[in-house]
Image (cartoon, rainbow, N blue to C red):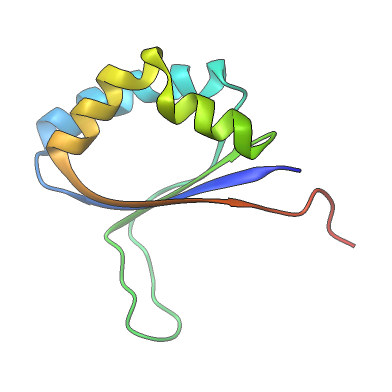
Length: 99
């Protein structure tokens, strides 16, 4: 079953975050992930939730998503992201086919 990593980001250090954006995609691909959403601005349609930047990654399984997040290859990009943003991140299993 596919898994989705959903990330709300507020960039606090744009220069350092640009370094993160250069490094992260290769590691995501290495673990079979792909970006479904990556960007800003975000438009709120209902409620008060208003993320500044929003990312959704898709992996083949929750195990692959966790392997990516815990990997040695992602250690440095993760450190850069954590040092240059305020981040909220969750991982959730999804459906494999919409009917």
